[in-house]
Image (tube, rainbow, N blue to C red; front, side, top):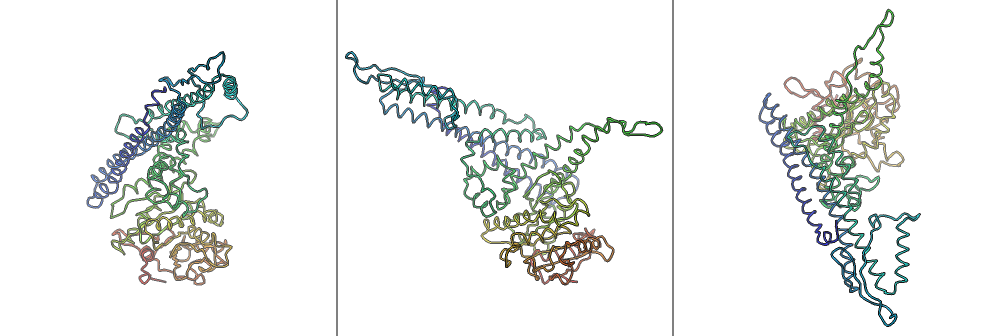
Length: 618
């Protein structure tokens, strides 16, 4: 870029272009939502059969195209705004330098040179003549720090100062300084142009109508490239409070402009998706981008695992042994393959829940948390908790992992359907909350360590849910938290979190009702010890002596997960023991072949909607 080009440049044109791409992205987002939440959902409400299932699959693919368009347009918007930001900074430097030249009665040439008039003390009867100087840039943008150890630029500066001091025309030094500023501005603009031109060219999709795993992997790379290039621009956006509580996070988000919000979601989807206190639709948008990128990443990794070598066994004397090739493959890939397969199965379960929107009236899903690492993390809401009058949070227990999450998501959906049946037209949200490292096996569940580590995370999510609801409606929702098995132990530790050093329960769990199903103990002898009103503490058990539920409850009592051998279904714990017709530990959410709810399910739903008189007790 040269001086004349920068002089005539209008950074606002790049911002206008960014605004155009943002409009396209917003339109794509709206179409995606309409396809998923209205068109597909409407078909699910009124039609059944294989044809509908096939149509929903096609609509999902179309929605994926629009989602990809939305993500890419957001990247282009941020890239163009960042380019405009850097060009404007360079243009402002140039304009300021030209204004200073005019104030000095200097003239600036079309090549950026600066001409200065004659001035100074006469020598041999003549005033020192004027002249023309060309500036030089320091070789780095002027807003970057100079190496304190010194470099060639420092030497050049020293020589220029020396030349200015001995030059007979006092205008010379001022002209050189202005010319250098002009040169630096042109250099900065050139650097911005050369940095962003290839990045913008890369933000181009394949010329087909299929959004494949490769496209989402490319989108993730694009995000990293734009984020690194846009650092100066993004640094102008106030970051979320470090270690902020949900209320602080909510205030930070409200303080951003619409463009700043869009930029932050585009560049930091993983961070935004985890911020408690932010609106559910914002977290959902961010987490769905992470979900698509991670699914593409895992699909690619899974596809690239070499096939299991054959033969698996080879003769060894009179017996058989594993082949060396198979042992090498097993050591290198078996564990990775199992993890990827399990994670992909969990992601498919999440996608199936997205696709079920509208089925039997099921509302839109909000992905409030997602991470496939390790055993995985999933937080998914049926209906918007920010606007719900009644919200229920279900916490699963031992052996929960991403690959098994489908069953837990179904329980959340079942709770929503039955609660809505009891309160037709009511605003209800049910959340499956799996955002902790659950014990992998029963022996691990004998320790409180897993629950203790999970407690802060659950507590902060509940606080965030409350803050987001208050920011949206100005009030609070009736909230119920349901713990199944070890999940109830997590709730018990969450209730103690922040309050364990207080003389009184000044900071109780921000919920109205607590349900413990098949609980091995909540680390307390009485509900009141957890700051829970006994009138709003509910428990249920399944099967008789010798059932798997009995073994869980009695096992927890005996290993100390209760308080002084007291568990929630004991009368000493306080609260209410609800009637249950579940015959096994996992049967609390069953419906029969005619979709009629079990007594266990119906009682939970009655608590969720606040119909306490309708609850049947043992």
